[in-house]
Amino acid sequence: MKNIILLIIASLILSSCFMGSSLLFMESEIQDKPNLVLNPSFDAYSFAGTDALRGWTIYTKPDDSEFNKIRIDPMQSIDGDTSLRIDASNKDVVIISDSFDVRRYGGYYSRIRFKTDSPQPPQARLRLTAFKGNGKITNRFSKKMKLGQEWNTTSISAGFLKPGAKFGRVSIEIPAFKEGSVWIDDTGCWEVHGFRID
Image (cartoon, rainbow, N blue to C red; front, side, top):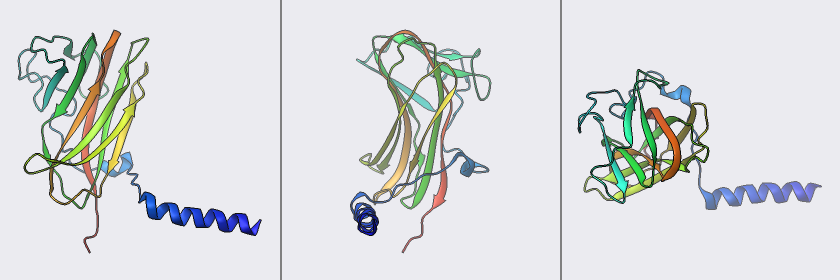
């Protein structure tokens, strides 16, 4: 029995050397901290044109400038008066926030709330990406979103940014799906921790 315990302790020590440390920030840590994402609740600056989604850019795959399956929805929300509704289509949709400043030694918590009425929901994903000033990616963090009928939450804890990281973006990826809609709301990114600089 003593040998088994020693083996377990040794494996934990060795695995921590190879795997590195992981971060886990909590929702409670964002209290009184500014949301770095502009327009996190998809408020309607306008109901038409490019001003409708201030703070966000929409891409479709394949590219389609006439794509009309995304709407600001005043009937569904968990925060504020509106949410963003993505209706079923044969295109992948990527929604990307405007950039915000990040620090190499900052710890970040990113979150999104979402729901669907699709009987076969897509495998959506939340991403937080850090970039150098020249646009080169330094870090990528992502988490799958398990879509269901009720509002649910997915979050990412991020830190240990690589040297040169200057700005970040939150993105939401929603693959093509055949029926129903997906709603997203109350998203954002907060700097919740500052690591000691040696």
